[in-house]
Image (cartoon, rainbow, N blue to C red; front, side, top):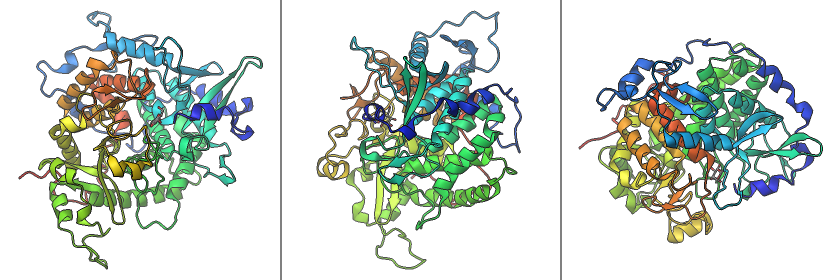
Length: 564
Ligand code: GLC
């Protein structure tokens, strides 16, 4: 949100942190992590053997042998396979691009009272002047955090998790309206006061953001990151503190509250996620539903069953997970076969026996979709609500659906099939389209409100976002489709550094650096590093992936990827 930086400097008093707020940061940081203590096998994901096997596909000699170490400036020499770097092997050569990316990532680090706390959105020195975008966005920090975790530097992630938890505790107001207790900020900023010699924080929960929309994804990312931290360090003490347990409960309370909902999906305002401007994603956007599902599952792993107030939350989570997976797998899923069913839908059906439950009018199927849908492949559509199916394909939601095992194994494979079949449209020359296709003309006018930043094939409207590379790579590893990941990474490597790590690319093929794209965008850099590290050591996937929960039996027996 580009206005946030300017707006937060005028934040009111309740949004400023007191030095006393720092209560648990140092206390918790002094805790000795308990290594590799796992509860109820809950962090027991896919066996690494499986991952290594799938990692070997298609490379002579096995790519795990290709190099086993990498150099990270400031982070020292790290083994990417989780074992100390062997002193007898000096064959590693720092990969110049990886080296450069690490340096750039470290330049974006911001300190709060002497401790690194997060990465700012962009550090841009390219035009000879400093054009930093000095907000730490919660969603933007996730790939940075994963890079640090994968590089064996968990402290910064711990600081971030604790500090954002404190921000959650602030009173959040927009005019005279108070936001829910669980709300997490979209971003925060460290304010340095050289005179007083103190650092303070200002945060934006939506009260400064363009359009005044609160981020529905921040809390979900926070929980997902807490689980990634726990999984990668084996340190359960952080997640088990009463503060973290309460933070999880508050987020859960907010999204599990009962209302007038008839669906288990989460009702959202437009612009409440990565796409943080009006783009017609209001309602039940796939991005939020996939993150919601993943956060519910992570919360279930992290909440101590015996913890005060947890029993009820855990029960509500389990019930919701069942309903949500059923709903998503049944109604959001689209492949050739299902499209044909919708194409022949009868309308105006009343009663329990209705086939066309949401009264989707077949004439609303857009022309592009009839050509786009391959006979092999499928995806979760953008949105489903009464008489409205947003048939657009969205990258983040579909990748997260794979990682969280919201997609059944068949569906996950079909999503990858689609990416392969429609490579030119979805990947083109720069991975990865944020959504497909772009909207234009009258539709663009009415859906975006004539947004000049979101013109066709630019920014959120069919632009290509390098940050999505890490999600694509993770999804590829999970589904054993490493060739796709390698191909995508090769494309990114050919241009990203040369183009100064832009925020996004424009055009049908993603060939042009985005019209208003920032350079040295931190999550473009971190996304590349995470993709690279995961491909080198697929066991890293475990921190960001959840295996299928057998209790949530696939509701659809129909093969997701239908072949003629
Ligand atoms: C843009 C993106 C948003 C991101 C922010 C900071 O507003 O849409 O997802 O968090 O920039 O990079």
